[in-house]
Length: 152
Image (cartoon, rainbow, N blue to C red; front, side, top):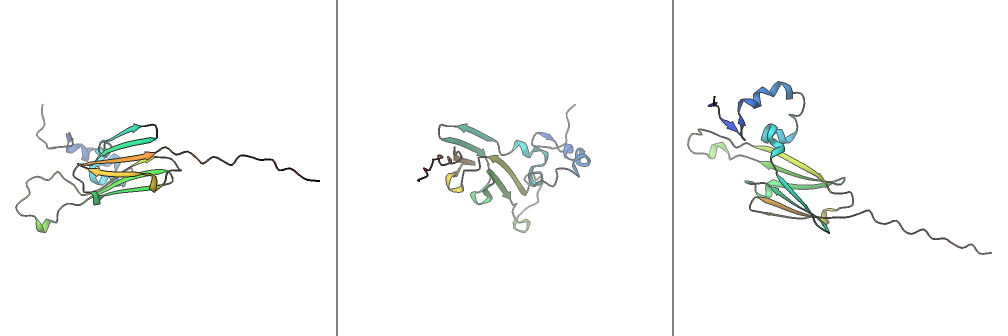
């Protein structure tokens, strides 16, 4: 029997409410749940390719403007975060019959190593895809131990 309830991201709209009591005290305070609910893990789909010199990441972010995407590097973790705002309701004309777009934030982090700096990471955003180039960097080699001769 098919349901006539609207579906959001391929799931029954009522599934969000069925999980409410189980998730109320754990996990809902994470920013990605504000925008995409329990489906946030399926958003920001990312392809990672290893090359000889580093890694290439392609992150799907359709519908976002470059200004709505933020990249931060802290303690070896690269965090990609987005913030989406809906149009001002006062500026809208006509009556909204259905609204499936939401406002909020989401983020995703990748460990890139503690020796990678902001200057090392190259980023480009085109046609809804954020492309990142991250070099492989290892710890600087410790200076070689040398023996000092004692005179006398």
